[in-house]
Image (tube, rainbow, N blue to C red; front, side):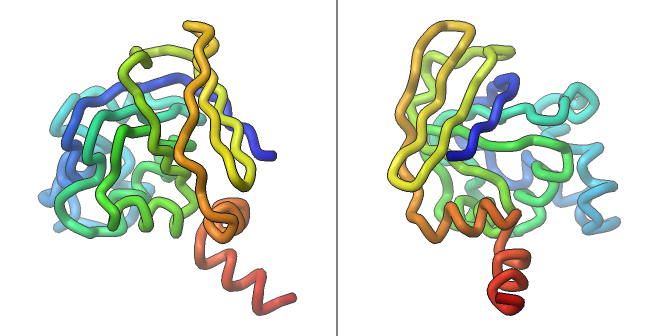
Amino acid sequence: MRELRGRARVLGNDINTDYIIASTRKRDTLDEQVLKRYLLETIDPTFAASVQPGDILVAGRNFGCGSAMEIAATVITAAGVSAVIAKSFSRTFYRNAVNNGLLPIEADTSDITEGDRLVISMKPGGLSVKNQTRGVTLSGRPLPALMHEILDAGGIVNFVKDRKQA
């Protein structure tokens, strides 16, 4: 079982990939270490500076909609965010997240507020999110075993490398 702990950073519905990292920023570079300084600047220009390692993004419906640019997921992980919990995800973003080692969790996020302390427990066949601040536990949509393996490896590139070496 894998466990993640972090502070909730709450966003709304329909957070598209251009909100995650503005297309104007992607014209200059695709280096996620540079781009992480601009994470979600369209929504809140101070957001990136306030992110702490292990923070967990919490959103409503349709997180990651819009462009299929993989850089949106890599910028989130580069900023130190360990997971995204949302009511629903764009399918492309969901897969890009897994492929880049970012845990996407589909769950009802209605009762999570900014700053809540969250503990995510994941194992094959089940995901749970305990909101320690409110004393409530949510069930997340389970991930297939293969996705757990990819996430445990840190993303698809490491997963493939590990398989080649075995």
